[in-house]
Length: 249
Ligand SMILES: NC(=O)c1ccc[n+]([C@@H]2O[C@H](COP(=O)([O-])OP(=O)(O)OC[C@H]3O[C@@H](n4cnc5c(N)ncnc54)[C@H](OP(=O)(O)O)[C@@H]3O)[C@@H](O)[C@H]2O)c1
Image 1: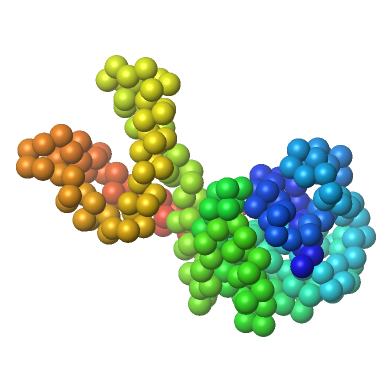
Image 2 (image 1 turned 120 degrees about the vertical axis):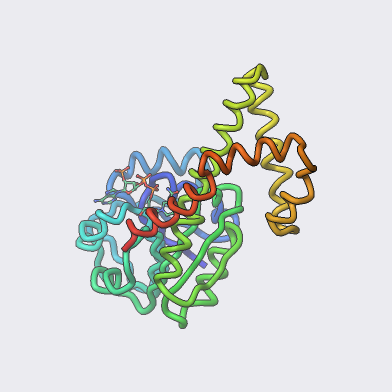
């Protein structure tokens, strides 16, 4: 299967890294030199094309530009794609269909972990392309087909933005370790290892049970946990999903 990726930014790069071993890829960009600099660092046999008058007839296009670039990009494309998979946060299927001619249109919301084939990718759109869209996005991690665009927008707030939220948690814990006297490098290594170990744990066990299993009466975890509740961390996370979702509406 041949895939046409439009864009050469952070997500396009993550997708190229994740998809290159399973699919034939071509990149379409407004700045081909920039795009070639990106692809050459990853793999030499990816063709790069200029966006101007690019013909998308029968192609499977993955759209990886910022939402505000949609109209400009669409104005430079000719023909009718077989499918457009858009990763543009908040951009609705109706707007995509109005902008780019395609037999099928699907929205996908991957995250930056795509470069390690560990993205959490949610999808919604035309059922006729559902199986192929899932097959493509499965190359970069877990996929989930949702039942509405609203659900995808909520998932965007959780899993598209999620790496940034978890990065905040990680950095704060690193700083906390340093503040109590750990060397910076040790604190970073400890938190990184913590996240690696936590991934299989959270997949196997409900969060409340993990917390209960490590919180002994009047112990260290109970003391630390109550400081998090005092700081309103739980409520701040719930509000962060609400605010991020709002931006997609
Ligand atoms: N970052 C994330 O974690 C994440 C997660 C899920 C979904 N998304 C979605 O992914 C999309 C891309 O995000 P990103 O983080 O990869 O952004 P980015 O790094 O800023 O990349 C944006 C890309 O769009 C290109 N571009 C901008 N204006 C253009 C135009 N008028 N015509 C053609 N190309 C144009 C840029 O080209 P130049 O570099 O030449 O300007 C660049 O290649 C966004 O829609 C975002 O909502 C992002």
